[in-house]
Amino acid sequence: MNRTTLSLIAGATALAAVTGFAAVSAPDPGAAEQRTGAAATLPVERTGLLCPRPSTSDLAETTYTSFAPVTEGADDKGTAVLRAAAQQSAPDDDGTSEDGKDGENGAADEKDEGDEKGEKDAAKDDTAGKPVLQLQEPGKPVTAEADGADAPALVGTADGRFASGWTAQQTTEVAAGTGRGLQGVACSAADTQFWFPGASTDGSRTDYIHLTNPDDSAAVVDIELYGKDGELETTVGEGITVKPRSAEPVLLSTLTAEKQTDVTVHVVVRSGRVGAAVQALDDETGGDWLPASADPSGRLVLPGIPKDATAVRLVAFTPGDADVDLKVRLASPSGLITPAGNETLHVKGGMTAAFDLGDLTRGEAGSLVLTAPDGSVPVVAAVRVLRGEGGKQESAFIPAARPVETRATALDNTAEGTTLSVTAPEGDAEIKVTASAGTKGGTPQTKTYSIKSGTTQDIEAPVPAGLKGSYALTVETRAGGPVYASRTLASTEGGVPFFTVQPLPDDRGMVAVPDASENLSVLQR
Image (cartoon, rainbow, N blue to C red; front, top):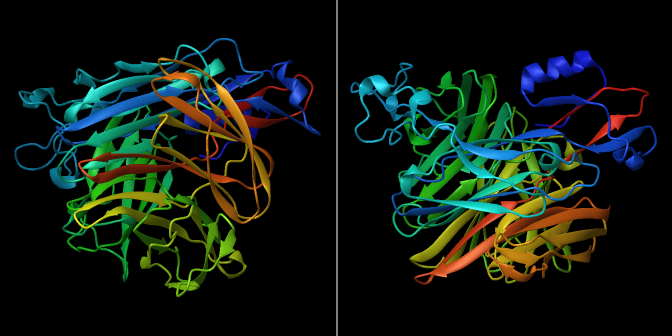
């Protein structure tokens, strides 16, 4: 959700009614030194994050990680806690859930064995509300582990010294079966609209849209699906209820009878707000999380395609009726180039289009830059990336990303297997990268890098001295840009190249506040 700055108590009241995460306070005199012109840049004072249920596999091994960078001018007190969300009730014997909706919409597998029919209310779930992860100090990440299909979705809030830049991540390894591989996703803020190009209702795929409600009242959600010929007819995609402080996985293939390889999912929240992410699992090529694309725009950047990608499939969608011919460029280490044979791609209005780009990066770091003529037609997009060959392939997704305006963080990094990819498609940029202390020990390290205009660089990121455990990488834009970044985690298991890619959106940890005498300002994320 876009950050908002208001200076009146009336505005604060209205915002709190919508988001539930508004905080009102006088500006910190120490932070006021960051004033620029008529505004001060201050740390946000309260924020929230939502993490989807990691897996339905009994073989899953999940690590949750939480971190907040040290922020100048932040409060000296505060908390950051992630708690288990209540689990949604399972279908009744007649195939419908308690709210009367078809039980095949994804609520299956949520019920523990032995639950009695009268005890299915989510608020009675033994895991609901239990603290899973709590930060002790800024600058040092903490982790928790959970095995099997019982690892819960998480709902969390941070305030005070932990709120600015608070980041959480879950990384899951599934050894075998549908979706085997490394699956990672950054926990996200609640919102009211999401776009997911790159999902599927094909028979070889098991794709869920995970909806997590952080609030004390129910949310009502509509799910629209768009295929190659336009909107798909859905059966139970409208008016899906997500109970308070609970998680609801919805199996996409149960929403429509049409089986299509490439589908764009549009989530619209009628009432309340939710967090949303698609878990895309394939029978042959593993699986990963598909985060939401950046908002529809006439210019998109998809950062950090692995240099050893063996196949890249671009999926794009434009809302409305207007067609668009997208200009395609690859930001390589040497500059912007046009892929031979894929100079422009035609996308019809209201229809999902897919394009196989092959081994696009050819052994070099790369990011896709998509541009509509004059930026006049908004588009959403994502790529599905494969690594490996034959029966030993793994898949991951990279959606169009938002830029790192000020600062962004990637978690769960290790000394080996971490790649930080940074691109500056429009102008030279300078960035500072900080490796935090490790979860079990280590001293932070910082390096500064220059990124040339139009290039993508896989940078040799710093590693904490004396590292023990995992660590956080924080990227700060110091000059120029805009800058886009992603982080890849990789390992090899049984000859299969397990990997997962997470774009690094700005952490929205700072907000501009109008400079007014005795001003009460709303700082929210």
